[in-house]
Image (cartoon, rainbow, N blue to C red):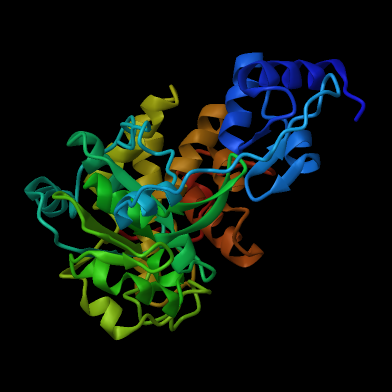
Length: 385
């Protein structure tokens, strides 16, 4: 075999360690590569294999006639030790406490959720509400306040047992069982957040024993996992797991009743009151260094009127708290109220966008539009609040 300088460097180092022409295993290969200051030689593992986990070093002087190494009979080991050899994880060095969100305002279900997390009890919670009203952010910030780890898993129709509990993966050239986020949360005693839970399928039923606070049996490695104290499960969704009748949240599914029944409480998250929402908008403006208290007032009033009309069945779209944050950021970038409003309402259909912009010009009668300036005298009708 013709050896390049780096290949020869590995072979020489391995031969000095184990003998010329010797048969070595993967671990010995890695050790030799590390001593030689080289990456694991995949060429050697691929081209010099002579048996299961046996690889023959090239003969450097042509004098050796080695006999393949025979491994001594392994000493009896308990099953757990054998199982642990199959399991790999890289999360033990990570800090999973969420970062603090600048400008976060505690409101709504913040207090009861914080009490649940602080208690350390296993008490699954289902949080439901329209999009963009701060469900996920609230849960994350509670954990940031309490310095408690949180593992967030975004659920989709494709999410299955392998994604949640774990499966076999290729790790450093070896097949290892890598625990999924559910197992990591159980073993760390932290909170598991199933985000957008109603987008999942019946494959979520793999979590039934987990939602009962019991352990779970990993069939793939014959190992029983018992949750540590502090482990809990929280879920967020735009529906209550019964599907979306109006079609607003396409892709949401009707979740199994047995799955939903295992959540101890369901908390309904509305949009914040005008007073709270103004604090949120002003907090966003402060964060983006573009404070305009008058604009904040107008935005909150605008969103409140749109939501009232939505709840009364007058329109099919809504302005969320998240969209107000988008508008404040656009305002910070472009320094123009109307530009920010228009750019952040472009996601709606033309009629809805026109209605939203028209409503805003009536609320904030001094803003500039493309054809001129809107003034109170130019309005056909007054907006009643």
